[in-house]
Image 1: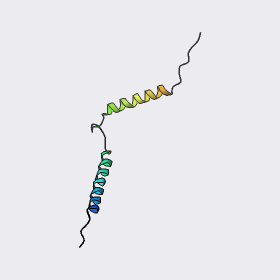
Image 2: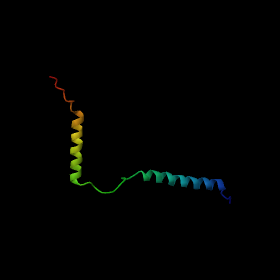
Image 3: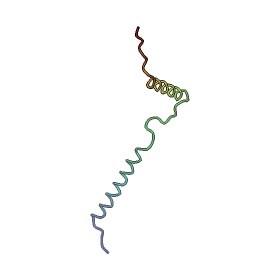
Image 4: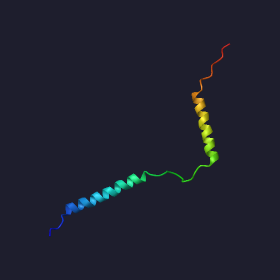
Length: 68
């Protein structure tokens, strides 16, 4: 029987380590950053009205100046 060379076993070990590293990097990007709580209904409603108000301000034409 022939003994496996050190190079082939090192390559296999390095490829396994690399695979685990890549998988861990990919999995670390999943999920939500920050606290895992839901916002209350009041906060959501307030954010929606704030967003609507800013949208109206941005899309409304500039007031015309009245010259006398």
